[in-house]
Image (cartoon, rainbow, N blue to C red; front, side, top):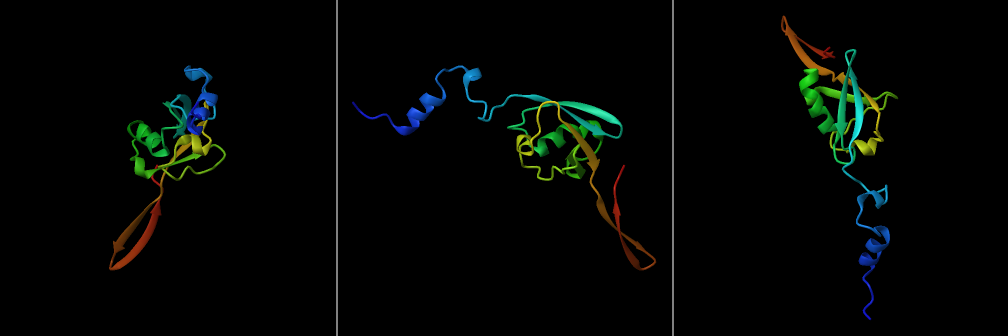
Length: 126
């Protein structure tokens, strides 16, 4: 008999059934979870797929309700960790079902010219 290729054997051992509920839980899935985002004394409930949806995707979901452009948002965990990389899936930051995130406007830099002098200002819009 021909030996079974290693990859086929691993797949057979890891997935003894075609049922998704019996697949190992450590594998990425598109399962959805509920999270809460707090901004200006309001709470927004979102449903995300943490292994698929990135921080940038979450910001895009919030853009209409918050009035802030996604590129001017800063998301952080309630523990204060800034979720700074928009390309990283939420799961990488440990965002789990029931998590609460804080949304803050990003600071923007403005140059003001007055009477021939230039002033650099940093503004955090509210």
